[in-house]
Amino acid sequence: MALPRWLALAGIAAVVVALGMIGALHVTGPSAELDPMRRTISQYALLETGNVFNAAVVVLAAGSAATLLALIRTALVPVRSGATVALLLWCVGLAAVVYFPKHNWAVGPSIEGTVHRYASVVAFLGLPVAALLIGRRWRGDARWRGPAAVTTAFGILALLCFTPIAVAFVLHPFTGVPWWRAIPLGGIERVLALVEVVTVGYLGYWAIRAVARPAAVAVRG
Image 1 (tube, rainbow, N blue to C red):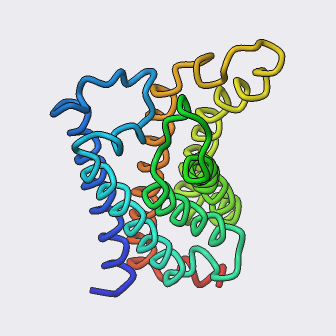
Image 2 (image 1 turned 30 degrees about the vertical axis):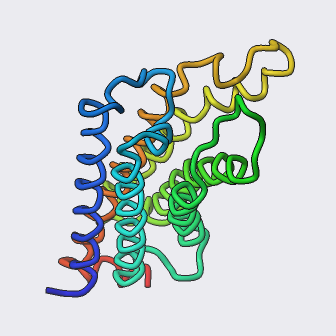
């Protein structure tokens, strides 16, 4: 089996494992008591089962990196491209979210908490940008027009999910309502995360198809 296919399969497996681990946190242990509509996913890292959350994010970051390598090896994504940079930012952002854990802002600001917040934004925006760039690259190719359209749709959907967060943040000075309370932040973040994780899985699936049809990517090579 070709290396790109192994890498893509590893990425898909990582998506499944990460979804299973984080999904389990919603229904078992002390994490099941958190309000999923108001509490962000990162809140799980502060509980007794925080190691499960951290492990899931690390697995997802590693799987995303494997998917990126598969996309590069199949020539779907050039090494030197905006899509590669955006996917790398997604991976680095995920790693930073684990290394710099969520902070309790009620006790005051902290450097770690600030880095965690910005790393989350970088990760959440990096992946949809990458999806849009990859989709645009292949939208004119007859064989890959379908996957390009799906990838673009995922990118747009992810940005739409992020929009309420951005709007709440921008309106905060005018409304006086803290942006994280103006919206059901936890629920929005979970939908956004689900869309982005599924996007990684789909990119892995696309890479597997490209391994089976190398002539299709040679046209753009």
